Image (cartoon, rainbow, N blue to C red; front, side, top):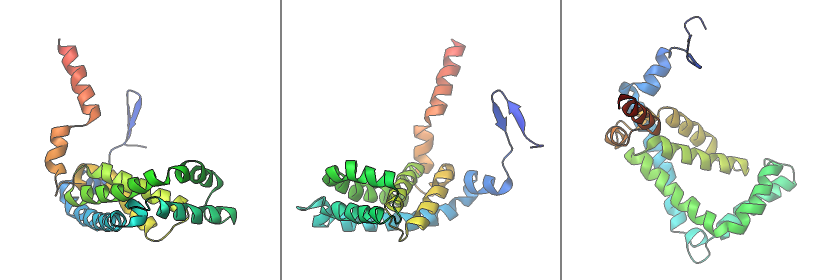
Length: 192
């Protein structure tokens, strides 16, 4: 760490040019626009299918989750693809609340898709999309989840510029960040 230095309690290492370009430069925003639109379309189309399904949000709400959890528990019993701790979580928490989780998944997928497509709170939308992908992977469902998880993780890392061609361009400066607000409050109180 020849170029690193200690600043207070922190070790500061200068950013390399590739990650500086990808995660901090608005010149890379077009790359993230394509990733956002792809992920957003995947999430919103999956969510709309669920919202319009009786087994997810209709008169039989919760039955799709019960079937999904049942399959995951069967895999866990066979010792395949599902860890024991996650099977316990599914059986003890998700299954008794299947109807609630059914609505959460269906509407959550749509909200993540909308957030990514319009570029509003992109990092947060990508985080929750990745969280759902990880949950599906823990339950033994591979499908497109690994790819979507990787892309969501990259969007989370690029949160500052991923929504540049979207609403984040205006929303992030208006909203600020919790850590910048604390610093501003600290600076104001020091001046008084």
